[in-house]
Length: 277
Ligand code: C2E
Ligand code: CA
Ligand code: CA
Ligand code: CA
Image (cartoon, protein in one colour):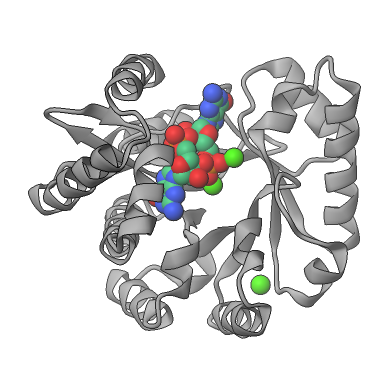
């Protein structure tokens, strides 16, 4: 997956500068692409210390005839800025829950399904209603669903956000703090939030083998996680050495190319059948 994507990402970047015109073009093509079925989901396995699959993270993909493969960190901001995010977010929720429900029925699986929720998606007035409807409709138990939020959410009105997070927690879903340590959040805030998991960003994992500052950052995040009784998951784990150091530091869960790239639902099924043996 990554090689193919790296090439098209470069093509995309050279054609698409940050101009207004290009944003409008991407927005139009994205709107069209959503209707035409150009978007799809892939799922990246997450494993525990015993190497057992314990979850998957759902990641959105867009392959456009003209633009090629457009990376999500380029088109999601466009969707957020243009009012397309509710439609895209609903597509992500619906597709993920239903594809994995179908897989669960076939294989009677029990693992966490992590879904990234952008700020504007989280703040759309009917978010909880849609979330409830999609979970009920899929038949996936809500305890199996984790919502990944980022610290950028906390720039918004906390008096609005904390009750929403509590409501989601009361519904039985898990909440994960994505990219923890890269943005803005304070320890006092963590104490107020019904968080279940901290995710260590790839940028810290990248430096774990030779960068003392990154090592310290990771050890601090794990210590915070332990103190608050949270699961700590590291993303972007690419080799055995990183995995061993993370494990030694006390990290609970791991995700990255070392275990698997993001997979289509069909490829995830093969991956699981191989793992079960
Ligand atoms: P993220 O949430 O931090 O996702 C992790 C990113 O790291 C993913 O990139 C994943 O493919 C990549 N990754 C995982 N393991 C490795 C590894 O071992 N090595 C390397 N080099 N990369 C690894 P991706 O899929 O391109 O997504 C980029 C960002 O776009 C995500 O960062 C997330 O912020 C956003 N995104 C992706 N899918 C969705 C979605 O469905 N909804 C929302 N709201 N945002 C999404
Ligand atoms: Ca994520
Ligand atoms: Ca909880
Ligand atoms: Ca990240």
